[in-house]
Amino acid sequence: MRVLTGIQPSGDLHIGNYFGSIKQMVDAQKNSDTFAFIANYHAMTSGGKDLSKLTMQCATDFLALGIEPDKSTFWVQSDVKEVLELYWILSSFTPMGLLERAHSYKDKTAKGIAANHSLFSYPVLMAADILLFNSDVVPVGKDQIQHVEIARDIAIKFNNQYGDILTLPNFRVQEEVQTVPGIDGQKMSKSYGNIVNIFGDEKKQMKTIKKIVTQNVAVEEPKEYETCNVYNMAKLFLEGDNLRALQERYKRGGEGHGHFKIYLGEVMWEYFREFREKREYFEKHQEEVRNILNIGAKKAKETALPMIEKIRSVTGIKY
Ligand code: ADP
Ligand code: TRP
Image 1 (cartoon, rainbow, N blue to C red):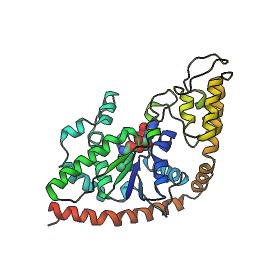
Image 2: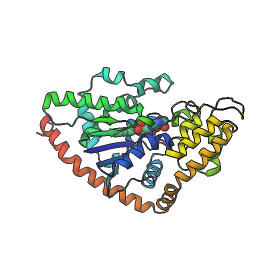
Image 3: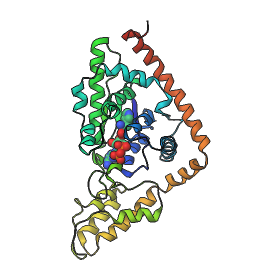
Image 4: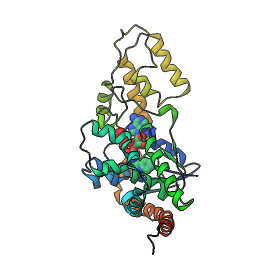
């Protein structure tokens, strides 16, 4: 079974990215054929500032967080240009209505982001990413489900005309972390300015955690944990007895949300310790990172080339 996912190199990674997508990918390496790439063409839709620097930063982060080049095919999207050819071919199998219904486009334009063609046609490029590599499963956060469904719809239309060429993909969402909340309780997202970074200075991280919005309940009172933004973040890092112990502390009363925030900060810092150390290594060895990406691009091409040849042939692009 092939599992594929992409991530945009658009800034510091946050814990929503980690639990919603990266961790699933890292876990999948154990028992699937995993393909992970840095979606640098996609990042252009939101301005593309500092793109080359952010691409290297994202690669460094991914390697630190557990993508293993021996187990996964790991590359930068633009190193396999066949994806752009497939993007164009698939455009002819994409009804306008399908793209007009895309939430991400509607949300962004509703927020006043000027609409351009790449923002509108972005799901077609994502479909090309998925279909070029015969992906069976695409692990994503909830917000990306619709894009995987669009890829599937496009593949069905293509196959209706040319036969069973494209593999129909399925999305995979980790139920308990469908949407990681941000410090304001909304979905955590770079664009909402409510993120908690994975890598960052300890003091700054604590400062961010202290800003998490909580209910106003007297210290001595028992507190509800299910609806608490601090608890909902902490539970991502805890299991079993540790999680139950935290629930007890809420129910018991006698501690304020400030105490739970300090606890969350400590737990998080510990959770990412090993990843931070790995990150420091790759930060110092950027040539090694480039080398890994080059090897990854070669491997990705080995899968993409027979597929695009087949598509050129059935569509008649090859003459
Ligand atoms: P952002 O919303 O911060 O711009 P991206 O759109 O770059 O994040 O998302 C990268 C990946 O991380 C996607 O698979 C997305 O679904 C997942 N993801 C992002 N934010 C969250 C979140 N708050 N909860 C769960 N998954 C998320
Ligand atoms: N659109 C995804 C995001 O913003 C990134 C992405 C691009 C992707 N191509 C993909 C994810 C293919 C999964 C599969 O998060």
